[in-house]
Image (cartoon, rainbow, N blue to C red; front, side, top):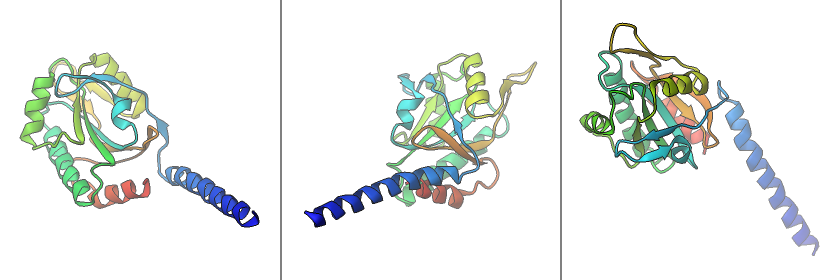
Length: 196
């Protein structure tokens, strides 16, 4: 009986320790912002909630638009490379990549599909989102990701973040990384592994 008691106590201790450990890991990251939910349409034209993509998965997100003349093409190429690095590390089942359009008026699901296919996106863990209003996505980017998303007056171009954003399974924004020029793939993989 006494052995059983101590066994239960030891198991309870390690359960508490494991739970605290994950929280402590999240606290060690430079950011801590609870992201809101977003109702969107994916590249297949299906209605989807951002929270359903983030459920039980670590999320890496970026903001793009398909007729971008500057940073979006290299960012998307780098996200494709990141997807390959995640697969090499055996983490593909634990990570969801999400590219969020900030030009929903132009970026239809068909446009997003054509754009993503040019970068050989693997949809098993990479989703492209559109299907909300421009006002909704600007507010979402500003509030949830603390980043701008706004049209450049008199043009069809947008000001937006050039980062890859790391979001925990609990929906907390923890870190952001350079997405255009020389992204820190090794650091991103290490951060994903820390969260497991």
